[in-house]
Image (cartoon, rainbow, N blue to C red; front, side, top):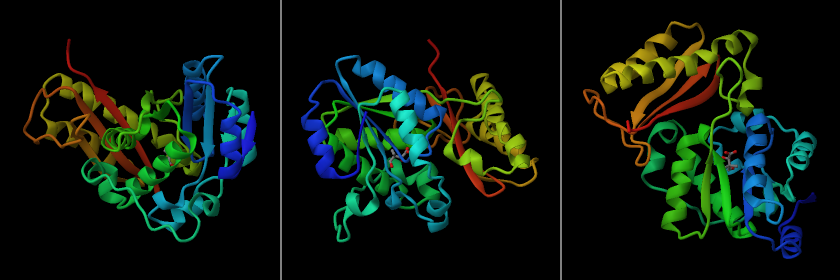
Amino acid sequence: MRTVTTKRELRAALAQNEATPRVLVPTMGALHVGHASLLRQARELAGTRGCVVASVFLNPTQFNQAEDLEAYPRTPQQDADLCEACGVDILFMPDAQQMYGDDRTVSVHEGELSRTLCGASRPGHFDGVCLVVAKLFNLVQPTDAIFGEKDYQQLAVLRRMVRDLDFPITLHAAPIVREKDGLAVSSRNVRLSSECRKLAPQLYASLQSAAEAYRRGATVGATCEQVKRQLEMLSGVKIDYVQLVHPVTLRSMAVESVGEFPALLAAAVFFGGVRLIDNIQIPSFS
Ligand code: PAF
């Protein structure tokens, strides 16, 4: 694996490895088993002849709270070791100055899908994601890129960006990786207190039972209420949102609506101040 930290070094490394497919896995570091599965999926997609490029860049433009950026775990050596173990060919680890300079004036804004769910409570977040991913696409020029379904809205927004800006790149979704107790693996999990860690699997459990109720004919309103009731009983838990939306447009469904498939049940919930997200896709019946 070749590790590079500047755009110039990245260009040189890519010029020496023009193998295709070239598969990009963008990350913000603090890599865990969820990222390992993205990297392995990338290696499989690239095959022995293709090239896997990973980026580790803690992107300041997607954090709307300075404390959140500050608290984000940084583990560069472990990240590089994991990338190597998962078969990455080129690892790009720039700093913010390298990535953005200090007089950037252009931004990338997706104006519809970004406004709902996490976008409603994290204004500007998806602009930062689109900006950095567009830059990575231009710098790396991959044929393919892989993103996790835990950040489902991010994937939907990036699909829209690829479509609307004509990036000649195929996006692939990687399924959510879960701990044995169902908690979706996330870099934020290490910030949970031991008490909250015990409660956090309730997020997925509540989504599962509500998704089942929806499949059996519960209304959209009753489905979301069921999740909220189950979680609000827990101490130190605060709900940001629970919503049933269309999985492509991310439009909310009417509360009285019943049996609209496919659907996505998505939630963001604070466990003692740590904001966790999760979702369940509810496909159409065949
Ligand atoms: O999902 C993430 O880790 C980040 O949002 C991404 C896509 C690497 C952009 O910084």
